[in-house]
Image (cartoon, rainbow, N blue to C red; front, side, top):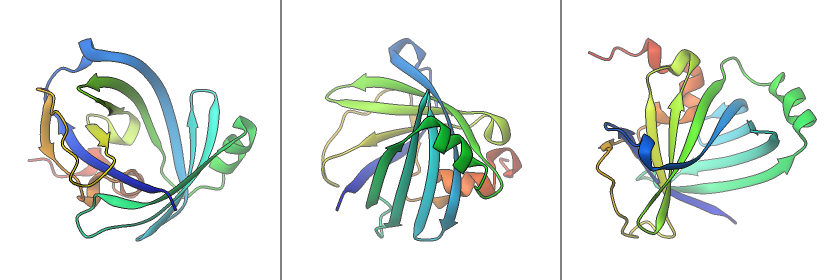
Length: 158
């Protein structure tokens, strides 16, 4: 069984000079119940079906299954998804021995920028870039599946 271990942070500084790759991602959820999600994603010209299980108590680890599917299938499956969609540009940044994924959101989540780093173990050390802000690992509001139901632009950000 594949396990995803990641830490998630808000971005509070300029990371743009460190980006080595960027790609648009559009995704929706066929199922976004607590403890399980079934996601359809189009990343560039490729389609993906992803199933995720519940997060552990810390919000660091969870089961993840991902399978590439045809772009045509992904486009058709997006039509079956629950209301709300994620539209973002994913930027990749090397920091130390890790690659950070920095997601800049658009549409209903405009203004939100989140950085994630995937780890081999929950206690693996990693270098934190200067542009990182508050850690939001385990904060369900920042799960993409939750952002489709409660978009960032509707939060009370006072």
